[in-house]
Image 1 (cartoon, rainbow, N blue to C red):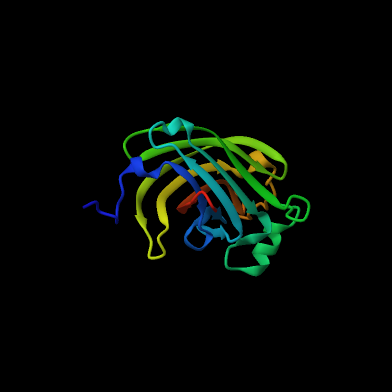
Image 2 (cartoon, helix red, strand yellow):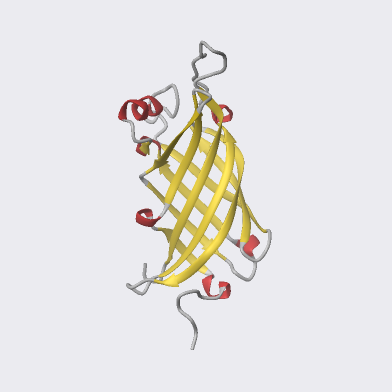
Length: 190
């Protein structure tokens, strides 16, 4: 009898939709050169096509509402939404569209794609680890992935900063992206 708690990777081929209630799109930025600010985006949607037999044929697309940024501090979030950073009023969406998927080993993949922020597009590679799959209590097949990447915010025109009296700058240029993804396999009628 097959173990339904962790299905074989071969069973995963198909179309998936990200589950926003169980997916986290987070980031970490250096602040004042001494600490880190953590945040996430709360409004997004994404689709994934998994080809378990030939992962290079897999694809992913992610659409994020820039105004949904949440660092737990409203004044900072309002600043991040304005023209100094994301300019969410004029550029309401952040988009990632995959261009290639490479299998690194049994459970690790590198997804490369175009990341568009404020109308500026640059390639980004995200290293993902397949963390397992299971049927949830509602009969949905779920696949899990954890991912990490690092980008330079200035590449997308997010260049606002303030000099510190002691040297250095208020906001670090390197941003660490941390993804924890739960994707639900779509049935032909969905």
